[in-house]
Structure formats: C-alpha cells, structure tokens
Amino acid sequence: MMDPLSIGLVAGTVLAALGTAALAGLKGWNAWLELKRLELTHSFADGHLPPAGNRIELADLRERVRKLEAIAAGIDL
Image (tube, rainbow, N blue to C red; front, side, top):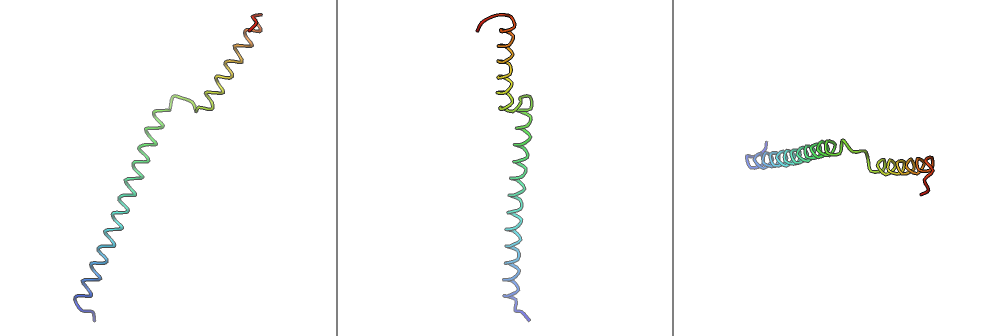
C-alpha cells in the first residue's frame, strides 16, 4: 500500500502532465486556426488575379499579337 505522500506526488505529476498536454494542444489548435485564417484571406485577396507566371505568359502573348497585327497592317516596327 502507498503512503499519502506518494499518492499526492503521483497525482500532482499526472495533473502537471495533463495540463502541459492540454496547453500544447491549445497552442497547436490556435496555430492551425491562424493558418486557416491566412489561407482564407490570401485566397480572397488574390482570387481575381491569375498566378504571376500566367500573367507573364499573357503579356508575352499580347505582345506577339500586337506585332502580328502590325505586320498584317503593313506597319514596320
């Protein structure tokens, strides 16, 4: 049989471990929520713009079309 001091020590250790695990879980939960908030605000902010690579390709295509139209119209660039 365990004496009261040992029981108190084990109970205190268990409570401290449980508190530490709960604190770590809450910090992880808050970090996950913040990540989801950032993902949502990022997707809404850049939702109307295509990715940068596509914008560059689109600008190149527009330049080519402009040059082809100039050639078709007989204008020398």
